[in-house]
Every structure is written in structure tokens, then in C-alpha cells.
Length: 152
Image (cartoon, rainbow, N blue to C red; front, side, top):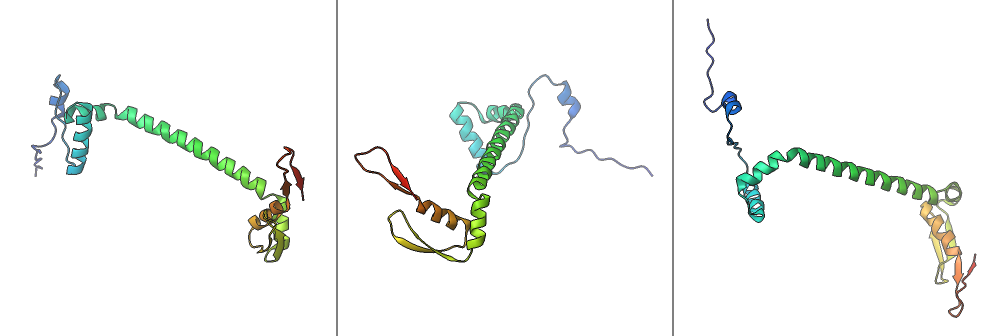
């Protein structure tokens, strides 16, 4: 028994397209909002919707390359940010601070802040150690003298 192959009348005739020297129509369905957006962008550029979409398609490789380049630059920028933040964390969460935190964890420390107020702080985070140490460092500056006196 022979198989009957039906041809789709809407199927693209690739041979006719290959032989054509004129522009051919390319159509697609999209939501009305997308068409409106494309039409507004085309109008702003002073070109037809057809010319705008043609330019998008013809330049899509350039657009994708530009996007890839931007993506690569963003990835490099974020990688540098992560490296900088890791270095900052390593600087502030050094062995001394970690050891002081482990020895003082869940204890309450009394210290004086920059306003010389006596405060109590329960140590629950390594930042608490940093707060206490930096509060211990006082800068005394005489307004008539440009040399500050630092004391601990």
C-alpha cells in the first residue's frame, strides 16, 4: 500500500525563495502590545515598522554579540566586586578578631562610645568585637591645633 503525502499549502517554498532576487515577506504573530512597541520605536526613528523589524533581524548577530560583550563585562565587574568584598571580609574578620569573638561570644562587654557614654553590648557577632575595639580608639582634636592626638 502506498503512502499518500499531503503537502501543506502554507509551507514555505524554499526553492522559490532561493531563486528570488527581491525581498520576500517574513511574517510572525505577536501580542498587540509587542507590535505597538515596535511600531512606536520605528516611528521615533522615522522608519516603517517593516524597516525596523528588518533591521532588528539583520543586526541580530551584532546585538547578540553586544549583549554577550556586556554580559562578559558585567561578569568581570561582579567578579572583581566579589574579590574586593572577600578581601574586606578577610581584613575585618582576621584571626585576632575571630579569636576574640570566640573567647567573648555571648558575654556582655562594657565600653565607652565616641560620645563617652558607657554602654553594655552582648557579643553575638564578630562585628560586636570590631565595634568595641574601634570605640576604644579616641581621637582628641584641639580646634586650634591641626595635629590630632590618638589614644586608646
